Image (cartoon, rainbow over all chains, first blue to last red; front, top):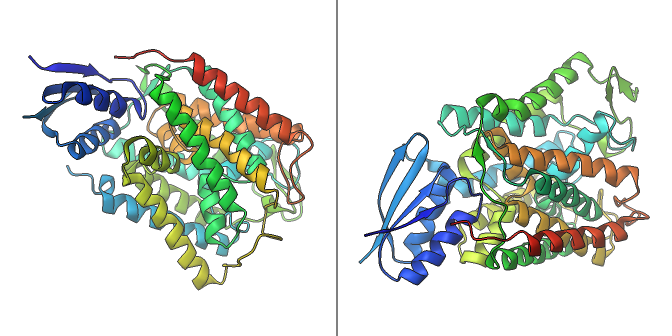
Amino acid sequence: MSEQIDARGLSCPQPVLLTMEKIKTMGRGELIVLVDTEASRENVGRAVQKQGWSLQCVTENDGEYALTLTKG
Amino acid sequence: MKNFFASRTGVIVVGGLIGVFAALLQFWGNPGNMGVCVACFERDIAGAVGLHRAGVVQYMRPEIIGFVLGALGASLVFGEFKPRLGSAPITRFILGAFAMIGALVFLGCPWRALLRLAGGDGNALFGLAGLVVGVWIGTLFFKGGYNLGRTQKTYGSAGVLFPLIMAFFLLLMLIYPQIQGEPKSGVLFYSVKGPGAMHAPLIVSLLVGLGVGVVAQRSRFCTMGAFRDLILFKQAHLFSGVVALLALAFIANLVLGQFKPGFAGQPVAHTQELWNFLGMVLAGLCFALAGGCPGRQLFLSGEGDGDAAVFVIGMIVGAAFAHNFGLASSPKGVGPHGIAAVFIGLAVCLFIGFTMRRKAA
């Protein structure tokens, strides 16, 4: 079961901040982050990769993105 | 499609382009070390429509119009136009107003702080230090759970309202063009002397503004975000764009003979270190709490962000307050009520930062 963060509608730097807090407490596993701007999508992807997490896939639905992040 | 401008190289290219074109705009007629200054130019727009009557700073700056319309165009073309609003608009308005007041105590937005340094104005160091401290205080609030809540999706027409205002301002400029030596043309005020009278040709300013609007929207270039991300996440992505802006503006100024190092007698600047510093502490904190530097707020407004538009309108109204009530500095130093305004602004920011916190997720 993967964890999820809903960062839709939140402005900079909240999506990254919430994601970083979450991956810190999780340590490893799978996390799904929902965002609704291209900038947040890029920012979250960029930030987690520096923490050793990888961006597995991005699914887009009606202008919103679900980012699947994993660390084994 | 991969967005080149969102890469490290991309944001460096954008910062460099802004630096070079800012130096060129000064060469083509804009005021000293003010090739582009979002705060100063919004203040000039407030003057152009008569919200304040400081005769030396009234001009409808086409660069600002171009930033918004360029960002609108880029966001439409690349499918990033997302009409949204409703994240604490009154708070953003107040932050915009005090951001402007702080910036006008220093005499410049973060872009101009960099351009002033790139032109040899040592006073800018105090402003930049203030900016960093202000942003740093903002990051402490972020860590404490500060946030302004979520936006909502809205009508496309609501997303274009602010760009339409900008297009209307441009139309007014064409209907009531500047008349040499006249302080007014139709409904628009035009400075006949002072920084407001110094400007590149309209078409040049507009084209550069449009171009910067396009690439800045694509790259998410943000000077506040540069320092914030460095402090909060130790991430230098946006910061590399800021360094590029500074470096390229410096080189361009050397080439154009616009580099004049010193502290005294710098164009549209004063030498009161403490107030250069504290003015930008206030502005930097406001930008951080509102999530973007003044330039970034314009680009966000262009891509349909109604809250960013409210921040910009707050800045324009703040400029009117600043000049109507003696809060803005001049080359002689701080205005009669500038110091009080900085402290009131800082108190308001602390109130906002301490009270507006909740866990969003």
